[in-house]
Image (tube, rainbow, N blue to C red; front, side, top):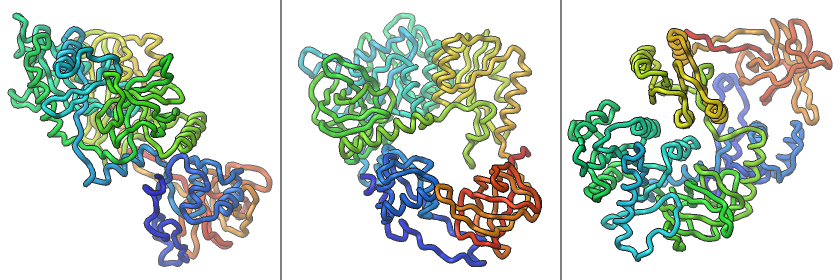
Length: 610
C-alpha cells in the first residue's frame, strides 16, 4: 500500500540526474526532490523503490560507519544518511498520515458522514437525563431489551439520518483524547440548567470546547421547572462569549426539558443542521482509520477496544495497528451487543483481536496484513525506547519562540488560577494589556482555587502555560504536570508575574539572525576512511575553524553548498577548534563533489532580539 501512495511519478524523481557544477549553477543549486518514506520501511524497501540494489545501498551505509543489513528498518538517523547517498530529501511519515493525505486528496470520492456529538455541562444539570431521553426515543423503534452493553458511544437514527453520540464520563476524558491529537468530536452540546444558570463546570466545558475549536449548541434544560429563567442563562452565556442567535450571535440555543422529553427533536434537528453547515465528509474506501474511545481487558474476550471509525470501512478479519499494539479484527459488535459486518465513517464499534489492551485516544489503522502490522509495531516500540515521539509538549516561557511557525499569528495561551475572584478579575484585565501588535496573550480559562487535574489536562491539550497567583499545586497534580510536560508558574507578587510575561512576549518576537565569520581552511587532501566516511585534510589559512560550526564550500569564488562540521581533529586528537596556520582533519555532515583546492569557510549564526 505504501508503494501505491508514495510511488515516484517517474524515474528521474526517484534517481535525480547529477549535473556538473559550474559557476553559473553553483551559486543557486537546484533544490533536491522531497519524497516521503513510510515508517516501518526497511533498507531493502527504500533501495527497491529508488531502483538501487539493496547490497549497494548497504555498502554505502557501511562505508559511512553504519553497521546495518538490508532487512534493518530505517529510522531517522539512517533516513538522513540515505538522503545524502541518493541525493533526495527523504521524510519519514506515519502510515496514518499517509492514509489521511490520500483520503482528502481524492476530493471527488468524499461523501457526507454523520456528525459526532459530545454532551458536556455542569454536574446535575441533566446531561445523563438528556442522553437517556435521546437513547430511549431511538430505542422505541427497537425490540425490548435495550442496550445490552456499554461501549462508550452509540448512534441515533433521526428521520433516516444518523447522529453519533460519545458518552464521555466528563470533561477530562474529552480533553485526554484531544491531548493525544485525537480530534473526535464535531459538535458539543452544552447542557445548562434553566433554574441554576452558568456554573464553574459550565465555564470549564466552554473552555474545553473552544480550545478544541469545536462548535457549541446550547441546550437550556429544565424549562419545566417553575423557577426556570432561560433569559438569565442567555445573559450569563453572553458574558462567557456565547451569544445566542436570537440576540444576534452565532450560537445555536434550544430550550428543552430532558425529563419531559420536550423539544428533544428540535435539538436533534439543530445538530443535523449544524452538521450540514460544517460539511462533514469522509472517504469510505481507503484503509479504515479510527480512534480508540475506550478499552478494557475482558476475562473471556481478551483485550477489547471501542473504535469510532473516521475514514474507510472496517470489516472483521482486517489486520490493524494502534499505537504500540496490533492485531486482527476477530469480531465487531455495536452498542446493542449485535455482531457487525462493517463499520463506515462515524460508526462506533467494539473490536476484538488486539494483542494488548490499547490506550484511549490512539489512532486505529487498518494495514494490508498482520506481518506489516507486526513490523510497524516493532519499529514504533524500538523508537519509543529511544525517545518519546509523536507528542507535542506544551510550551515553557524559555522555548516559546522555538515553537512559532513562520507567517502564522503568534499567540501565548494561558490558564490563570488565583486565590480569590478579585485577583482573577484583575489578572483577566491586566494580562491582555501585555500583548503587542505581533503577539497576543490568550486567556483560555481563569478561575479561583488551586491548580486541578482538569487545568493540567486542558493545558496539555492546548499547549498552554498555567499561571498561579497565591495558589498551591498538590503533589499529585504537580506529578501529572511533569508527566504531561505542562509548565506551572506560581507567583505571590504581581509585578514578578507581569515581568515574566513581558519577557515571554519579547521572546515570541521574530529574532534577527546575525552571522559571525570565524575563518577559512584550504582543502589539501581527501581521505576515505572505512566506517567513518570522507575526511578532508585541511590547513587553516585565516581565523579559526570550530567543531559544529556552519560552513560554506567554495570553489572559484562560487558557493557550492552549505553544511556543518561534524568532526574536527588535529593530528590524532579530537579538538574543539583549530587556529590559523595549523593543519586539521575535517568531517562534514554533507560532502558532495569536493576537490583539493576548495575553500571551507566557517561561521556561526545566532538569534538576536530586535
